[in-house]
Length: 360
Ligand code: PEP
Ligand code: MN
Image 1: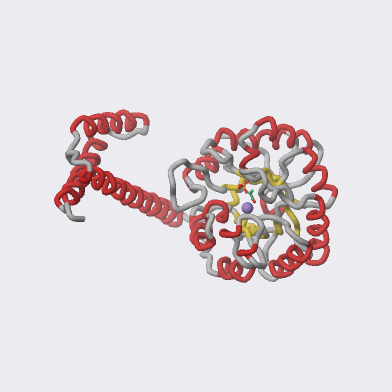
Image 2: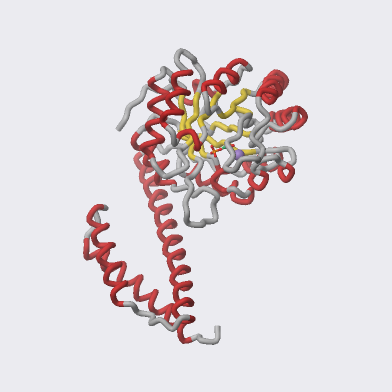
């Protein structure tokens, strides 16, 4: 466990017994857009207005952020609405400019957290500066990099630190833009118990329809806040159009959230543990269902290519592999073997049905 001396979220955000809410457009685009969204969001009880000023884009030629002008609009929005403002920084120059315009919270983006040199440069530029810093998880599922970035910022003397869980890039296609891999956020909480974790459902989901469910899931997991992309006219957004929601829609999402309180009593802790079990069970069932979808695709391939359903070598290798993995996971060999025998039996049954259905 890494015990860092960190200010409570409440001390820098004012959020007490409720999640911290950061909302705003992916990018600052125009003065009118920032002023409009700031006014609309100030009616939705958010804590910090976000907007990207410098945008790390995957391909050159895409919109790479409006730059310093955007900071002027953010400053104006802060003056007119009283909202705190936050933006992403990727270099010491960004830090300097953001501070010059009175930005209240800085965040380090996922593409920066992966690079310890960049994180160190930002940390060095934060020496002696008392500004909250939020650190997004790296794009790849590696908690070591995430923790390392938090440590670098902490060593620079920053005490108002939070982590942002924005999901992880995977080669495999999932319904998410960035797979949440909740277990990594939970592991971070276990290792660094006093680091608040803010969930970013927008970059996890990539689609606005997924945002509400991800927010609820984050609250069920006991995470400490949400960063949600919100734009007055999402479809016309210059970046991340598909995932942004209007301030009104954001209000509805927040109003419908069930916020769980930390259980204090012994009975409460039991409830908490049971909820964790229910969650894990749901994940197990979803994973098994996903597995069977793949099994069926393989079944079709085997049928079309006249390959036998049962491939003894593959089955044997698979079983050995699971048993050896089980050893490292504190699971009993026979138990894992029994589970896989059951799964395999069902897989063969499904593929046999597909093989028989030659007209499909
Ligand atoms: C963003 O917040 O707009 C952003 C670029 O996010 P991430 O660093 O999570 O990709
Ligand atoms: Mn974005």
